[in-house]
Image (cartoon, rainbow, N blue to C red; front, side, top):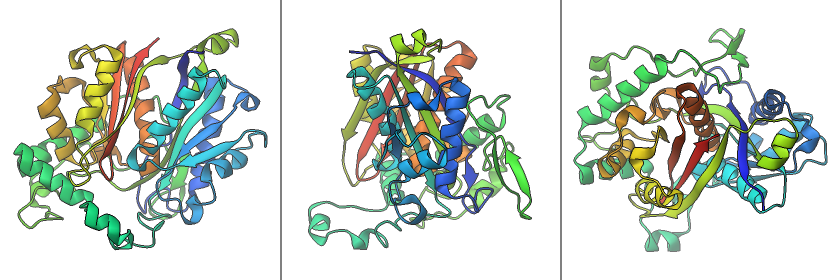
Length: 380
């Protein structure tokens, strides 16, 4: 049985929906990331034994097993297989879990967990031809499946979160992201500016280093007239890709590679489908218990800011040091390309621990229909 370690983790910058990557196919974004990953790691692509890919909207240019298409487009040998999975927002975090579990089982020496999503070119719900009305009526009689925005409002009700609380977290997310002096996990990636000229992005497109609090407060709520959730305190719709190279530690070190981190726990949980975004709370508790640590032992935490109310309710329950939570900002600022975000947050987590000489990190993500994924890693 092997010890699974992270050798390298990268992501593209996250582009706005309809922004810099509007003319870039998702399979091309994924190919760019896969090629950049192995080049940065210094690994020959012939050594990769599987590529596990997260993608939520598997339709159009993201259909037909986009993971395999990305592998072929990246110029990997045809002998390198790939699979595409959908655990909704946790898809590429789950891809990393599956890759690392294959390594730990001794089935492989090198595997990649990755993800991609172009919310511009493959809009949400296009895989089912519409919204919730396309789901099985018998299922809807059994479970109250609602839009995540309404779930976020119910979370605000239950935890007493105000509009001001949500807007404050949003402003902090942008300020932290805008205040970064380094973006080590990002692969500079070619896109287009507003005029259609080719540009190379090296930072996330949606970050606003300076937030006008009066303009944020003036934004209309989206899901309830007297609600909390606005476009300003929810994650941005985005385009991007991410990839994490996982290896057997003994093999990687024998090949002259330097592992960056090892896995202490991997968790996936189910939770209330109506509240649907609160799974981050039991997932965090389970991941910490499996790792044998407490929330106070963590040096860096990445929680996906799908909505500000998710992060705020989680913080109310777990009581973390908020200075260690999303220190470089979160999805409200840098965006949330659904299938790519999990790998992207892992890349941020690894880079953040390296940047601060930290040891222990947590990544946790809420997932549609009431699920969550969580990972605890230890920097080597």
